[in-house]
Image (cartoon, rainbow, N blue to C red; front, side, top):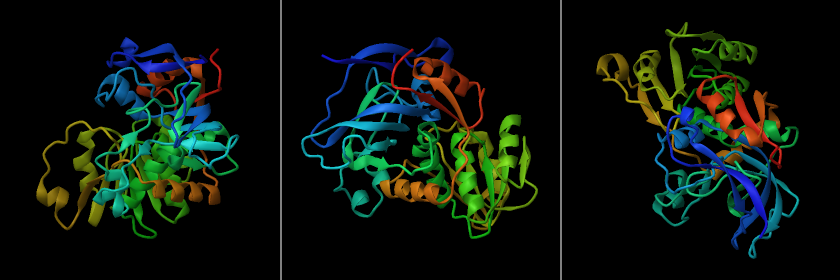
Length: 338
């Protein structure tokens, strides 16, 4: 039996307790509709941190996290005709849906009650190999290295869905709260489409990055310098919801992009919601979101800020994410452990 090295979530808890454990597992066999992928890069997502620390309740014990996977197809399941062996493909958060419920039938497969997720319901990319349903892997745009394209597969796609959910009008004013892996990609798409972007983030390095990418302003706190037509909250901090709503102009929408958020304080109708301001969440993504975003990434060369880590240092990468020691995205790279 061939084996591989991987990282699992052992006992969820604060990152200082080292909830990830390094293990040896059998190389998985693809089911009939799956492909076996040799992992070349896997970005580190805040959702992985939520899973490791227990903010996101585990759905199975010993899960291998990681859902921004870039790799090469090694072997096809019996019923798979494409992608072909040797193709470079991407694996994202949404792993499988039922295809028959009312949400799937109306094009909202991200709301499917029977949806399954990479690195939560099934093992993900913090490993040398993984399997994924062939119908849910992505063709990847050329012109990006493995490390650069990996964050596009969740940070990019979810940021794109959040950008569409906040209903930013053409040429509008967008507020971005928090400026990590997802935000720095969504902001570039918005700027490329003609928006004025204002960033609020406590990280000085992130503020510098935002301005270098074309943001009109970047502040540590306080309201942006002008009313906003739309805003996206990327930071998982519920106390930011009231001030973000208060900065919206009439008819503006605040989209919350994360899978986890701390409690939201009481809202005051006149200050936060009156004049048709709206508050909405973002739940996963559809495959069409992914295809649309990756096409935008092909047409507009996005600048992807990456800090690389060997796969053997996955626990350190997750700890650095928790402590905000890098800007942009962390990416585990290489197919062998040191």
